[in-house]
Length: 242
Image (cartoon, rainbow, N blue to C red; front, side):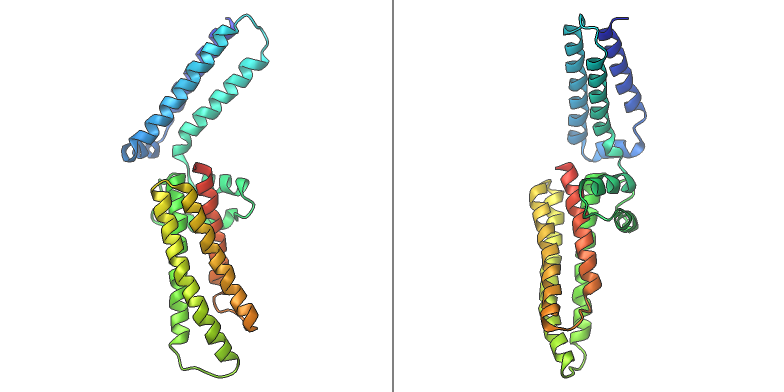
């Protein structure tokens, strides 16, 4: 069988098999956002048609290298189509591979806890990460309020309370930044979403600096570490889809 016909047959069969194996989660996503999924399907179909035309026009060339490369490219396009069936594990793996700041174990552990993660695609998981950032920042504000509402002490305690007062404001702003990141990602303005998540992480570092300058340990250190990690996850996943 000529190379062009072989490539045509393999490409079409590969596409049909991939569509058959798409899971129910992919179909649910199509119901929620049919325009996006249809665009991906049409793009994959057009890609295969283009490659088939290319193979036909070069059918006189008997080299196996070019058809093999084109078949691989087709497989990549189909993998993109099926990415709608992403899981927490596969998304976190891709994010960690693309951004060294992402802790894979942390990513899987934290995203898996959220009620919106099952069945979510990368877009949904980026929003989950932003939402977890909101929750963490809000928790830090409540932690600060609990300390600041207690009777004041003297010496180191006075420095701690002063620093905590500053950090409370920073974490309040962080909560707004993560909430803004969620809204921007939801609106598919990925660049703006990443920017707001980055600002949220920067606010956590500013709080650490406040306590360092005061010379007292921060009671919000673990909140700050969490903010940095979940912010990195949010940005990395968003970067995968923008």
